[in-house]
Image (cartoon, rainbow, N blue to C red):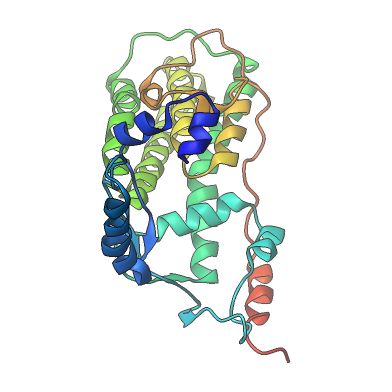
Length: 289
């Protein structure tokens, strides 16, 4: 790591010693990383700081059984990626992974439910309806706002508080809670959009569109650590160029989409997980028939 930074013209030692250092490990190597590795490091020299945090997680089981390649009770990563996008796996594993050493269980049925009801039914649904409606009703051009009502004020407050609330959870290694916070944010704006009924073209339509699109922008940036491919898709559909991860974390809470901005093309972010496919994948586990 130090050499990589030095080769980039960055003072590696200064960067290392001034940063918060996290070592993510499994519970089977606690002794090595809590005792032996620090002792060896201190025995060599004390020029480089030791890790500040060592978040430790449990093991992963599959359908409530220990993963075993010899018994064909496993799913290879390449195999999984032939079935579904990497972001599906990222979402599911983070969602079920609390800051704990308890073992996790990959369950095909729970995976199906979480992807279809949460990732698609909540997040994907909100982004698609907010951007899709704006394309249809306003030719993709963000409208001018009027005076906010109480619901608009609450919606804007949700956006402005998001980066701080997420940052605290991320720094405390509660990644599952941070992801849940983003999903709660999406759920709020789904309800906000439904409550405002912009399709009726009432007086609050412009405010609803303006704030909903800005909420989608906030989600695009906030989601990058969890769903990098999907967050970039949202970013492009919002009509922005470049990489979504080039934005600073605090900008999550900016009202960054201004009136007059033109959206890109709005297309569905995700594809539904079919139960028939899951049944087939379950049958592939275990001894060959």
